[in-house]
Image 1 (cartoon, rainbow, N blue to C red):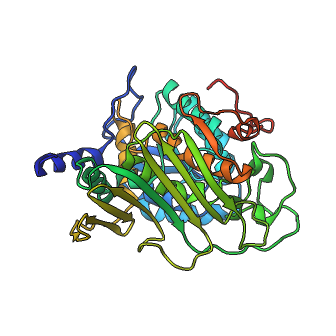
Image 2 (cartoon, rainbow, N blue to C red):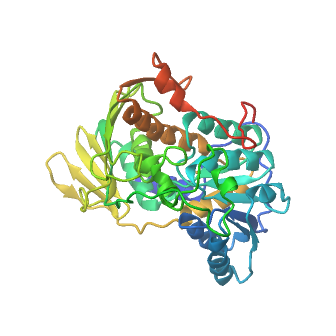
Length: 430
């Protein structure tokens, strides 16, 4: 077990920057005295938070705001200007930003189906990337994101902020130190009340929206408000449901805490019972992941119809060991030992800021990978994708983590990637 001094050093080092050095050439980097110039792509909801977050840091300046919906741009520009005292330029086509050599990095908060194309193109153009979760829309393109980051020596950070949060870092260190003994199981849950979105007819495209660009690689379909702002999450063409939306945060923490990489068997159920609307995604999922190399199990539970929290957390994670267990959420974590007595642990305020700072420090560094490096983000996002494939097929999957293929099930295997609409194709080469 580490000493207190060693533990503090670990936390300081991990929170400040990533701990793994890149092999091969060093990253291209901004000077340590320069601000990283960032363009934010997709500024409704989470994207606006990224824009104001980076604008509020001395290490970065938001130079551009981009959204295919012009109605979203003015408020985002204003929010950034209030934080950094300079007004960013407005853009509607991300491809022009990717071609702009004055931009060092992009922050991507588009719908899920745009995460991989935007990330890969940005890497190819020499830009670093902060991309929101899940990493990808499907497993195949997630691996291509990793390959692009490595080939072009770019920093690519997934927006799973818990990887940089002091409270979670302390919790992980407690697990690593063996405080609760051998950890056999983790449970992650997404328990919250979503809304019934009803049923809507197709309609005309709203003024100021470049709908063809919004669709991007997805199939051409008429515009429908139930497949657009926010509600795109619940459609397979664009989203990954709440397992990929909120659930991936907790899946990532659970896999991180277990120290596991890829499961061998994925099983469970997913169904739509409570929302009789246009949503295609299950409102209830229970998925189990078995990790043979560590003899551990991860259980994921999703109930997006529940008006209450579980174990004190709307979204949370539990770790069960031979000597005790831990329950964690963004409000903090609890440590309960074998005698059922709870031990006091520090309470840390959760914030996005350490994750933003970690990304910027890695961009300015020579050879540092971020705390939520795209490889880790891809592995955790893959859990969400596999859980969704179980729900869609109704079958147990045998997963080969080395080749990232499903054994003996051609139908399920076909869901590991998608077809890409021209001219938004992703090829095998990155």
